[in-house]
Image (cartoon, rainbow, N blue to C red):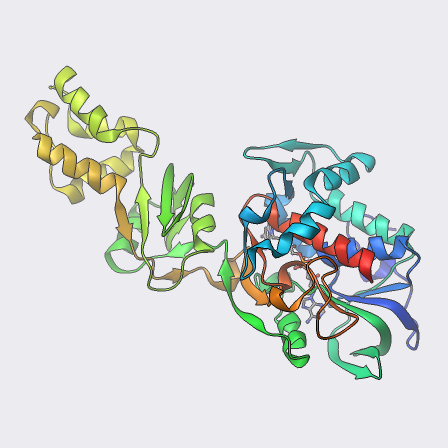
Length: 408
Ligand SMILES: Cc1cc2nc3c(=O)[nH]c(=O)nc-3n(C[C@H](O)[C@H](O)[C@H](O)COP(=O)(O)OP(=O)(O)OC[C@H]3O[C@@H](n4cnc5c(N)ncnc54)[C@H](O)[C@@H]3O)c2cc1C
């Protein structure tokens, strides 16, 4: 049996007519967690997915090293119409609980920065852990199963695929968001919610690069490949991390973070020297090194290509002793309060997550059950819960999957 690529051959053919205690739609992070927990409780669980293998997004997560949790995961790191919604599930299955799972399965991990926990080896180890957990718990997984429709039959949900129909009292929708269609993402989870009259908060791409147009795009193109730490502000929210100029606009962790808050037409403000009082340093240098060229000095605080291009735009250069204090202030201000209006995002093709989704106000935060439809559950990214970059989204998948796994 191939343990690194859990394809459909790993599973026996499905029996077409069986009723299941639980059917989970989606064999991603939240669906597999839910299946393992429910299976361990003795529930007969069927997982259905149209993909060729389970856990596609886990495979690619964290650049292949899976940033599987964040030690600081709490409600303040999630975007949702109901921010406190995540608290019960996150408190019942915490980052330390998933660390224990990793330990028990011999998966090494380390903290990269800011509580971000990565696997020492490949993210395949995490998919393996979930896959084996499902197997041990007697869970059945049907891959290549395209879901054609969901019906209700008295108090049962009937799931029809191209290969058969199965019914259950407990249907868990773990179909993820719309980001990265090439990894199997579809809007089916939202369609199922709407079918049952559950509201959906308008989805949009999150954790995505931002594109620029016109003069800004030309500037970004000239700086493609240049990276530097910056602070980006949008309204009350700000992040400090690395920015990367690209031929389309801007990327890097700080841009992905702010993109989840940004909407079309809005401005963001960048501080390109967040760690220093630039004006004070410029004035100090003017006194102490009056013969040094401004471009040489600025290159000490910024990548050289950026420093040169900035001075070209600013229209002022020369020896430090010749630059007026007023010009130094204008220069420092321009670098510390660079206001831009991105023209768009990288779309779902480049977004790591989807902001918005099935409205949490219609769900029970402890069980993840839909308040109006007994036996219908929504977990993971399909919900209107979006974590910051840094392991928060997978933690939400684990916690919400665990909560529903205990409830079904
Ligand atoms: C490139 C990338 C890197 C990421 N890195 C990280 C990271 O390091 N840390 C982190 O915390 N988060 C990361 N994320 C986000 C994280 O992977 C997701 O938030 C998480 O996987 C969501 O889990 P889920 O179970 O809700 O959905 P998914 O894992 O997306 O699972 C949904 C499943 O439903 C299936 N499905 C969808 N539509 C249908 C359909 N019509 N019929 C049948 N099946 C269907 C899919 O095939 C998929 O298997 C990353 C995302 C991407 C795209």
